Length: 199
Image 1 (tube, one colour):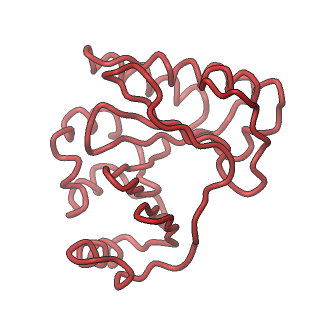
Image 2 (cartoon, helix red, strand yellow):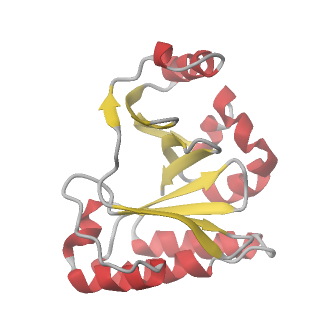
């Protein structure tokens, strides 16, 4: 998503969620707006959380990095990441606060997807998903992992997959917000499953 699309998505999410605050993500978006970044968003199956991920080109301006660091409450301005996302910031819409902020290149080991590398019964569900929607790679960091799809999967089609069960409690609201979005990656942070998407 470009900045305009990301702003529209956040404002639509806020309009659909009367109990939630989206002030933090909107502030981060505006702090980085001068770069006209390409953004990815992510939603959690657990509910009440959103993530924003600017693509690597976000790190080209020291002034914007400083502004983003101020919004995120970082004490030091991190250097740009040469080969990955610069910011991955999770916001709790119920508490109105950042719950996790990662800066720099993604950590972990990257390799091809192999279902046998995952424990049961997750491996079977991932294998079925991979047969229908090929996974380009997997990044693993301890118990956390990210699955990158070869091509974006439209949200309505993603809801037909077994892995979408984690999103069923929010499926109506998310379908309204993501009807034109494509799922580009699935992230498991050790507690919740996230669907990363682009507009």
